[in-house]
Length: 595
Image 1 (tube, rainbow, N blue to C red):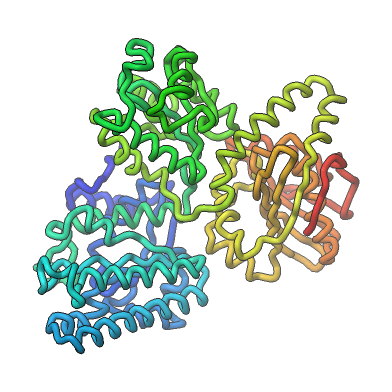
Image 2: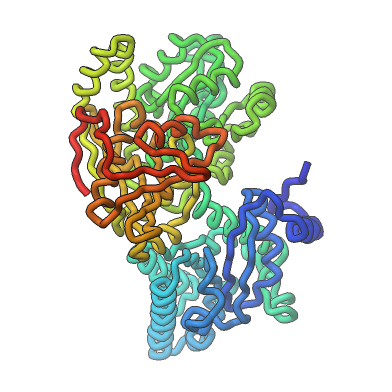
């Protein structure tokens, strides 16, 4: 078993592991990373590469010349422009050496001029970043500027107009403002990583003089860890479900023994730690992570706490699914996954018991398991340390997800009442008042589109994963047509739940490269209506033939009859449908709009 590296692992182990990864990257997904920095960056690369490898990624580096930030960003022939991710790292000491020297003189007129010069420097940098973004298709990841280690003003620094720390804060705000106006420029919190470690430990002034790299070994490990989490979050889907134990997890004590008045949860003492943990869970729920319960307990006792205890932040309506029984936790997780129609590899299981955690790890190795620390005061930090919860985009669908699953419960109840009678089932589908709106993928859809390609496994013809940069590139190519599907019914909106990517391969032939749907809309004929809309649009563009491909995986069984069911005939490695549009589908209960 390959040893796990952490920020506490020695530099020697990192060096050895990186040599091993470089010699044999089998099983790792390659990702091209351009490194542009105002200081020598090569010593950081093994640390970053090892952390990325633990997330299944093989870093293929393109390193720009030392200190040539502007030249690398503005040179049209720079090899960095081919990268999937371009990482830009700098320090205020490098960007603004002259303004900092002027601030240190404390001349009133010179202080103001130095501040203006520093802000002008940031304007030049953000202009270069914006120009680079416009000329490339990858993601531009910019490290926040760390606060300088020393200020000549000492403890007076935060209160003085010549403040180094305040200037660094203002320049980072300028970087933030740039990202707010851009789709593919993101920030990596380098300043936060260094502040977490502490400036005394993060910097090595001797190595700055010798090698041009100002970070200590510990500083490089912490910065690399933060950068790896950020880069991985650009290309890997975040966890979808947090499954929680109850006793000594959501509250202190055992409700079956201590009773509702004997458990610890509230505004003071140890109970406040459990309140903070529940608040953190609600924050993840607001980002689209579903919360579920798997507890060996009495269901009535447990929900008495959810419904009536004044200290509880989590309520019954916040829980997407639950299994409160005496079954094994692994079995409960399997049942929850089936109920939510989600893969167990997108689950995080949280429990205080080493025994329960070990059972889930043994039986369900695809589940991420968090065994909580002994002290509840550390629960929030333990949860935040999970990279599986990292995300670098947040869509409207993410924010709607928890409410969407509540609506799905109502749909499921209505469907179960009708599913054993074909006539009733047909009436049920009609009663849903389904509306499918098909449109071309637009500027505001790129993040959600990439997200769907990365996380949709079951109804997905090819499971080709794409980044936001990939989607941008395809949108710019007139040979591609990218379609998105929005679905709603009388219970509410599903949001953007389907994608189809078509590529013109001949004058009269288009190839369906991607067809995928969220499992939340399956079983309603939505896939037929979607294909009908896409085919109609392609026929208008001159299509007489439509080809496609189905690549089987362990998880995409629900999509395997999609092509033959809709008139495609297998021809060797591909599927062909002609003439178009073909026979009508059984989707008359759906109102179709667009594209």
